[in-house]
Image (cartoon, rainbow, N blue to C red):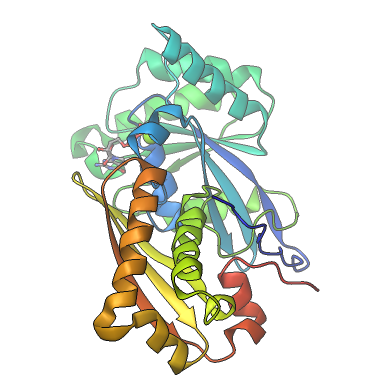
Amino acid sequence: MDIPNTTATIPQAPPDFRSGFVAIVGRPNVGKSTLMNQLVGQKIAITSPVAQTTRNRLQGIVTTPTCQMILLDTPGIHKPHHELGRVLVKNAIQAIHSVDLIVFLVDSSATLGRGDQFVVDLLQKSDGPVVVGLNKQDQQPPDQREELNASYETLTEDHGWPCFKFSALTGEGLSDFQSVLETRLEPGPYYYPPDLVTDQPERFIMGELIREQILLLTRQEVPHSVAIAIEKVEETPQRTNVFAAITVERGSQKGIIIGQKGSMLQAIGSAARQQIQKLISGDVYLKLFVKVEPKWRQSRQQLLEFGYRVEE
Ligand code: GDP
Ligand code: MG
């Protein structure tokens, strides 16, 4: 498969724009992935059994009008008891040293444990700035609330790391926390196009696989005026549901893509589905929509949205 070189250009950041890389670290199960998905605003990992085992780092990108933060979800840090554990921990530690800001996440609904102390000892060795997230506030037993929060605050205050309380699951307190992260980043550029939510290429490749089938099956008639947007990817235990919009410029092109009684769209969908199944090594349900957007190719914004390079 050829993956065309169609990376979107990255706009110039406005003055006072802030940006940076933020690692989320903590022992397993404290809610690191939940926090990342909440901040990004959607579940971003398009997982497959294969990808999951090899993936040791996932970036989520949050872009607001004033800031872009790239969040690194890291495997939980724990005292490793086996080789895979050692590798995962090593990767998490590497992340600590290559970011602008570290979020040390704890489960404040549970008593402070040696696992948290282990992470503190590691973080102490890095000289990057650290903020502490007291997660799972919603789950604290009301009568232990103060005691639990205080134990984590005591653990971290020696190091001068400020603590913030929230619930990654309910979202309570998170917008304040996001503002805190933003103010702690330095002025900087866009590292990624503003509409990208992850550096994972699967969505992009899925779109290309669909486009590839359109090129193959409709030949010369439509290809250049077609763009694919992966609207949604849903994982269920049985399969991955992919919803994709095919955008063309004219009604006649829409007719070609849909074909007699939908036969062309069906052929495109069936062939693309098989390709995507290979990509993610799992069962896929693929739903295609066809939209007409006159002159989308002349719209800079839309080109960016579809992931095309836009020359200045
Ligand atoms: P990770 O191992 O640190 O990435 O943790 P996950 O994000 O996978 O979360 C572990 C479990 O904690 C999941 O069952 C989450 O639903 C749950 N969880 C995460 N954040 C919260 C929270 O704020 N409140 C509650 N009650 N549960 C949470
Ligand atoms: Mg996780």
